[in-house]
Image (cartoon, rainbow, N blue to C red; front, top):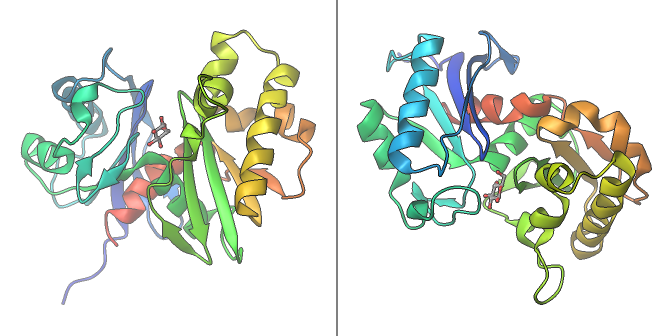
Length: 253
Ligand code: BGC
C-alpha cells in the first residue's frame, strides 16, 4: 500500500531569484526555512540548473524520495518550455523538465510559476471556495497569470503579455513591479498603470476575483486600495511563497 506524501519540496525559479523550501502539503505551510539565491545573469539552462542544485543542497533535500516540484517563468507544455521573456532565449522549445531530471538525477514535476501560485491559492489560500473565474496575477520581474475556473486551473495563460497598442510595450513591461523600480514610480503612479491593466483584464474576462501575488504583495496595502475595480482584488494569502507551495503541491498530484 502506498501512502500519499504529506511533504514535498517546491522550487520557484523567477527572473530575479530562485527560491525553495520543504512544504507541508496538509496545511500548505513551509516546514523549512526559505532558501533564496539570485537567478544567474542571462539565466542560461546550465547556470539555472547549478543554482537549483545549490538551493536543494542548502535545504538538505537531495533525497529523491521527497517529491520535488519546480516552477519556471515560461509557458510549459509537456515538459517543454515554449517562451522566454526574462530568461535566456535558449529555453524556447527546450526539453526543460528532462533537462532538470537528468541534471538532478531524479523525477520532478515541472510547471509555469504563476500557474503553481494559482494552485497554492486554490488549495490553501485566497481562491479556496471561490466559484467562477479567479485570476491570479504575479507582479514581479514580469507579470504572470493563472486562470482558475470553478477550482480548475486553465494552464499557461500569458496575460502579462497583453499588448497595450501597436509599437508600445506589453503589459508586463509597463506595469510589472520591475517597471515600478525601473521608472522610479511611487505607489500612486504605479497604481495608475495597474488600474489600466486590471480594468483591461476585467473587461476582457469578467472575473469574480483577482489575487495579487509576487514579492510586492506584502505591500498590498500601499497600492490595492488605490485601484477602482468592480471585481474584488486581494493579496495572495501566501504572498511570494505561493510559487514554492504550489510547486510542491503539484509534485504529488
Ligand atoms: C512569463 C510568464 C511568467 C511571468 C512571471 C512572464 O514574463 O511569460 O510565463 O509566468 O513572467 O514570472
